[in-house]
Length: 175
Ligand SMILES: [Zn+2]
Image 1 (cartoon, protein in one colour):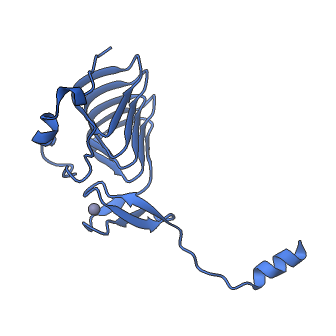
Image 2: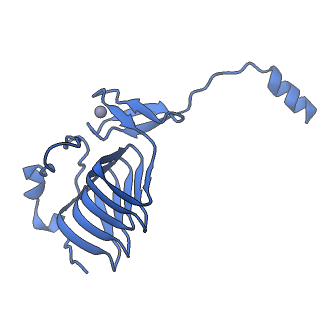
Image 3: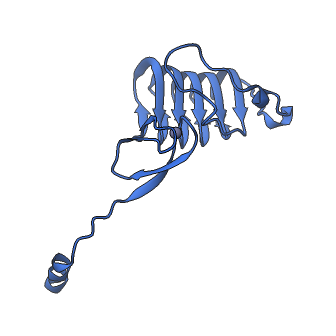
């Protein structure tokens, strides 16, 4: 044990920066960042990026929630936002009003109260969730197609998403 400690101490220390790949929610392209970073700028579009996961636990009214990680709207949260943008995933368990844009799976939980729109590669709605609004556009990679800004009107989906065959859309049955 002592040998091990001594040996370890005498070894030259390499400064290793652990990096991970992130997807920019502005342009949809990949950058690598230090795993310790909480924010960075995209290597491609140079826009600032938030890296920390967002967990909403209470009332929130505001513009844009965005992260290169995950967004969770917990069971007791009541969130109204222009957009919730996450590169990895969005889980909605409570009340949410707004547009969800996600580079990964979106899940709407069994007791969620959702009113708004979802643009994401996949959408899973648990039985019992209350759903209103739309459009719910799945099978798309929305990152890079949407200007993420807190001001102005809610963005419209690109026309070619809406003109995809009807079979590509989930049939959303509220209740
Ligand atoms: Zn970018």
